[in-house]
Image (cartoon, rainbow, N blue to C red):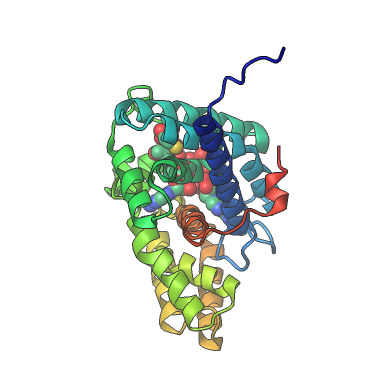
Length: 297
Ligand SMILES: CC(C)(COP(=O)(O)OP(=O)(O)OC[C@H]1O[C@@H](n2cnc3c(N)ncnc32)[C@H](O)[C@@H]1O)[C@@H](O)C(=O)NCCC(=O)NCCS
Ligand SMILES: Nc1ncnc2c1ncn2[C@@H]1O[C@H](COP(=O)(O)OP(=O)(O)OP(=O)(O)O)[C@@H](O)[C@H]1O
């Protein structure tokens, strides 16, 4: 006699979908980490303005987060009619994911902002289907719900920068429904591809489109308003010169990179939002999940 299978076809479909979304999230983070060149950020050339990060560490951290992203996506499809409960559930998974990240990275903040942004987006995508505008709007609705399980203050540098400079930071971006992902990164990705930029150039241009106006607390916390202005102004100049694929754009990119290096600052928030855009782009285009990420666990 065989034991009855306790899972319905719907359960199995939800688990498959959750793993698929988690694979997309990990792939998007790996693509972001390896994208080269990025100003001030970890890329294949080195650690940028960071002394404690490297691309293999970023990739290991991304891979360690697969299970957390899958749990969030599963919660997103299972808890479809109680957003307060769903918010509490993904808050708890998110805090566990931050602990997992710290264990995988040896105590370095590799992906705190990314867990927050991509976590909300995979949760939302599990219930909405592949329409990126609907995904971002639902993620925004979830981010606007208070989480009674969250500490009143994280004490992180980003939080202090938000208070000191009166900006919304990672929370504000999510609560507004990820305007820099939907309204800046994704349109630039499409525009750059359409005019014939190579894929890596299109992605760098998407990062620059985010940097040009984002209130990035990584920059504010380390270098204050001066660093934020340097990053925004530098990114705008590269785009105005035609983007990274053009000779003038590459020259402007070199100037931006040298300035950020001198100031020891990096646009970590913009990098997280590029990863968020790459995730939504994968979902929208129905990209096949590469075998390497399928075999991570
Ligand atoms: C809200 C978060 C980011 C904590 O905020 P905190 O004020 O502590 O910010 P902190 O500076 O530590 O992290 C912010 C990170 O976001 C990124 N970031 C910075 N600026 C921005 C910006 N403008 N937009 C988006 N991301 C940004 C950076 O990578 C930065 O490292 C998050 O860690 C959190 O609350 N987690 C709890 C778990 C949870 O609720 N999860 C929900 C589902 S994922
Ligand atoms: N390629 C990348 N290179 C560097 N940072 C990145 C990259 N991609 C994303 N980031 C983001 O930048 C953030 C790192 O910022 P930062 O170095 O200011 O953190 P931190 O100093 O450890 O912050 P805290 O003191 O608040 O813990 C990470 O949360 C990560 O999400």
